[in-house]
Structure formats: structure tokens, C-alpha cells
Image (tube, one colour):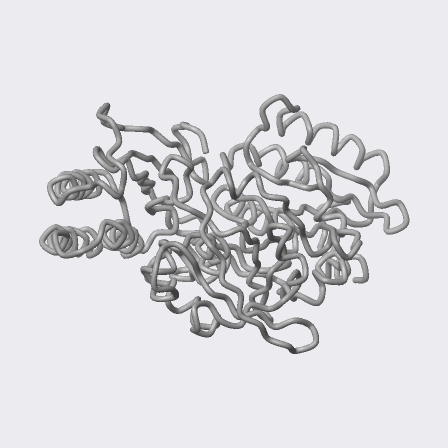
Length: 420
């Protein structure tokens, strides 16, 4: 995200940090919290924007209540109650961020994904190799199926796909899991794993410093099983790349960000080369893959729209597909809206995590003592007014994300496109 006077979608971020030294969360006093909460309320009341006029008065009342309660709460509880307050504003772009290295919150050495058929362990430090690909059925003795409901009040979201997207990140932080009642302390968490044979086992993982987390020997499910990833999971340092699939007569464009990549060709130049190649090979299908595109500046997508509309032979039903996923957000979501509104594009995949009729610009600041980072919406816009209160961009074709496809190295979305 960059400071642009445009959208979050453009999403501009301005920092308004106090110059004082950060007070570690563990050392915050009630006075420190009162100062932070008072400052937070002042900024939100003055600058946060929403189509719902009731959220700011409710936020102010909850801030006052938290100030009164803060002396009887642990510092960890206050931190995550602030996160709940931000989530209560009902805006997927407005949140307290706890994943930055500056907070130094300990992490668990795992990587998971919440597929539509369950929560699975896909990566971890080497000592967990035997458990790769196991389903996580319980967290701290509670069914993993309860994560969605319990996290709903903690995670800022526009729809359930943001929660599904975010759960793997929150599973890394024992502090968050303790606050939500999945563990008794902030040092370790017990998981119940079920392997492919149906056998269950409990493992208790200890929290690591961020450096220990990063320095560990990592393994992943596909790597240890020799499973080749599909085209959409091809490792690449490029955020924008394309490949012509000769046998399928399909041009595939990986649109990984709606921001220019530092040290790489600008999006507009990548698109010039892409459409020069499209004109040369005359593909029967054109795929725009945005399933892991979390946004940027949506004006960067204007050359894409223009190029499609200039080619009547290409801009026809059944020829252009845009793949969405739960990570598709902000400017990428708006790009999907534009493709649907202005071209003959078919939207396919999994619904994106953004609301098409909310945020249009985002700023950020840090609280003066704790230095907790706050992001918040300052401008709103209805990008697709006809959708009314719909909380996500509707798809033409929805295809579930299942563990069995991941395990076999398949991409059912691309398989559907190429066969139809």
C-alpha cells in the first residue's frame, strides 16, 4: 500500500506517529492505555468514514467502557479488546495490526490453510515433518470448526472469506488464541491432528521469537511428497508475468498485485508486452489470475481494461476469465468489478474478501504509547451500487478450494476453464 490520493483500492497510507519511545505491551500502565484509547477515539471520530452512521457513537461508548475496565484486565486482554473494537466498526480495511515485527509477538512454527473441507497443516518446522497434510480437528481441545465463529468478533472483515483468509495467521499467535479461549497461556498451544489414515494425535507447540520462527528449518507438504505445483503456484519473484499455453491456445496472465513492483517493469509496460503477444498468437482464451492479489492502486488496471475493449475478437463471452480467491482484495476486487461491468469477462473461483461498496482510501497511524498500528478507512465509494448490501463481488462460476486438489497438485479452476 502506498500513499496515493486515490483509492485502496488505491489505498493511501499516512503515518501520524508520536515521537515518543514505544512502551512494550507487557509494561503498559492503565494511564498509558487511557492515553492510547483516548487518542484512538479522537482519530476515529474525526477521520474514519462509513456508510453506517451508528458505528462511531458505538465505538466511542465502547472505548469509554474499555478505559474503565483496563485496570482489571491484563495487557494482552486490552490489546485484543482494541482489536475487537476495530472489528466492531464493520470495515474490512479498518483494523489493529498485530503481525508486525515491531510488536515481537511470539509465533508458532506452522503454516495452515482453511480449505472448504477442513483446516490442514501444510508447512512447519522440520520436527513436524511426519504431520504434514494432517487435518487440524481441534485447537486447545475445542473443535476447529468453532474458529470461524469465535474469530468473527476479533477479525475486521467485510465477509466470511476474510475470516477464512485470516485464521491461519491468527493460529500462529498464542496471545490471540488465549484471548479467544483456545489455550490457557500465551506460551504454548495444543492441536489435535488427524492423518490420512484417520489416526488422531495431540501435539503441543511452544511459542518462538520471530527470529526463531524465521530461522527454523521449514518443510512443506508438496515438497516432502514430491508434488509438482500447478501453474498458479509456480514460484516466482515476479508479481506480473504471463505464459502462453500452446496446446490449450490460452494466454495466462498472473496478476499478483495492482502495484508496480520495485526493480521490475511497470504494470503498464508488462501489459503492452502481453497484448503484443496476444495479438501475435490470437489465443482462444485469456485468463487473468488474481486469486492472490491483495490490491494496490486500481488505476493501474485501466490499461488492462482498455486493451481488452479495443479487441472485439477477444472481448467475447467464454473467451476471458478472471480468477478470484479469498485473497483478492481492495484494488484487485475493484478490477474484478470493472472487468465484469465493462467487458465480457467471466468471474470464476472463490469469492473475494472485499465489499465492493465500502472503502476507497485507507490511512494509518500508531497509538502514542503502545505503538499499536491502526489502519482505517477515510473515504468510501460504491463501486457497484446495483449490488446494494451484498458483501462480496458475485461470481459467475464458483469452484470450491479443497485439500484433495491441493494434495494432488491440481488446479480445478484452470481445469474448468481449459475444458469449457
